[in-house]
Every structure is written in structure tokens, then in C-alpha cells.
Length: 112
Image 1 (tube, rainbow, N blue to C red):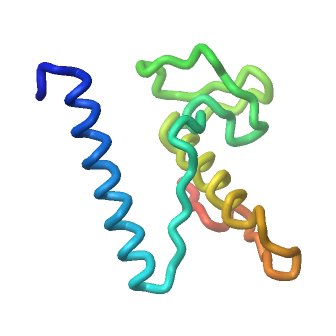
Image 2 (image 1 turned 120 degrees about the vertical axis):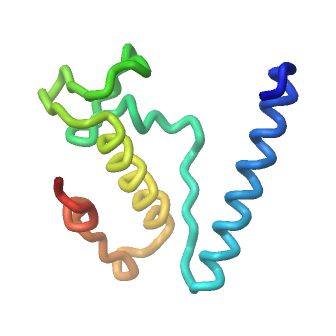
């Protein structure tokens, strides 16, 4: 690891942008569209059931427990549902109703 934290951040950012560039290329190759969500989107802190944001969630909390609706779910699975939902929202935001056939998120995600 690089001792200079500013330099390490720059190296990480370049690597990440190369990865995204590669994904865009591959998506275009297969006739697909890559949708990027904001890197500061609170995917782990947002309840996938009701949308409540839990501000005091720490990295050591492996289960997400919603204080609003009572949902108890694995933190990473919860984040993946939120990322899927946000990606679909961005994808369909500027389309007409007749172009959009939104699938229920539950049908897109394998149930565990």
C-alpha cells in the first residue's frame, strides 16, 4: 500500500475508472446499457423495504435492522436491493410510460 494517502486515493480512483470504462465497453459490445449510480448513494444505510435511512449504521453491523418498519436483513443483500432499485429508477427516469415495463424487483432478485 502507498504511504501517501492522497496518492493512494488517486491510484484507486484511476483503477476504478478503468474498471468502469471496461464495463461500458463490454456492455456496448453486447448491446447493453451500463447504469451508474452516485458513489455517495447510501445503499447500505437505506432500508430496502421502506426507504428509511439509518444514519448510525457502522461497518461492524452485518445485519440491517430497520427502526421504522422492523425489517431484518443481511446488510450486503439490503445494499444490493437498493443498488438495483436505484439503477432501475435512473434507467427509467427519462423514458415515456409506454417505453417502460418495470418488473417487480422481487422477480429480478433470487430469493434466499
